[in-house]
Image (cartoon, rainbow, N blue to C red; front, side, top):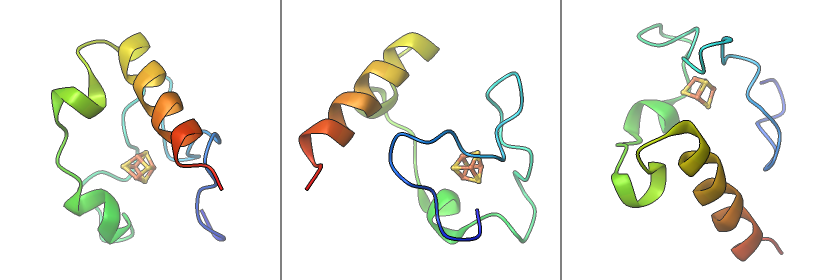
Length: 62
Ligand code: SF4
């Protein structure tokens, strides 16, 4: 996203199946390439992942 992805905003690169449309492409941000999914951050389901990331964003909001 041109100005970066604000917290709480869905990335424009996610497709309808919640997969990254630019996975493996050079335009994918370095941060995304370096992120290693772990169960404590991502959970085991889409619903759990959304709850976990929303909780983390709320806890770190300034
Ligand atoms: S991996 Fe990065 S670019 Fe791809 S959908 Fe997720 S946040 Fe967006």
